[in-house]
Length: 146
Image 1 (cartoon, rainbow, N blue to C red):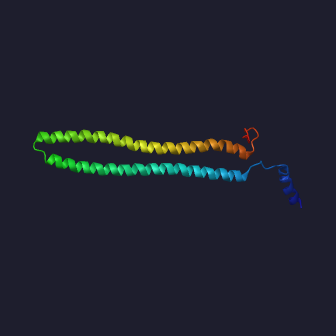
Image 2: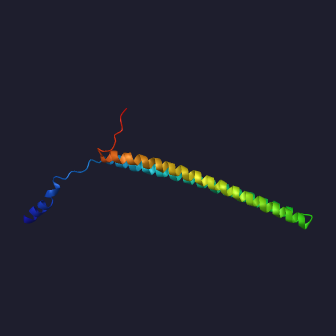
Image 3: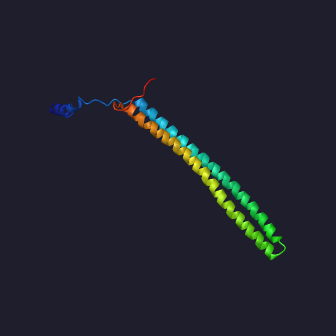
């Protein structure tokens, strides 16, 4: 019996322990909304990457067609000077298109990243107030029911 009393004595201090007032349904709901926000952010990024890859494929196809056309023009040139001029024109056009295409791809990826960041930022701000509500923090400003 001495062991029984020792066990009771060891846990005697926990008799007055009270669990914090936590809304576990709220915690699960918060977690679900977080997952939804991450899913929406991932969807925005995935759609942006799909657009970027599609556009890169279109650009590659256009570049191949331009290169084939260039080869025909250069091989059909009537003089070395005409061939050199066509090469210079092609190089200049290719450089301009490279910059333009890179900018376009960057804008596509940037737009999707911005959309994802906005979704997560909005959710983060919501989480701050929700955590206070779930924890029953009396110092947190309460939403008025007006």
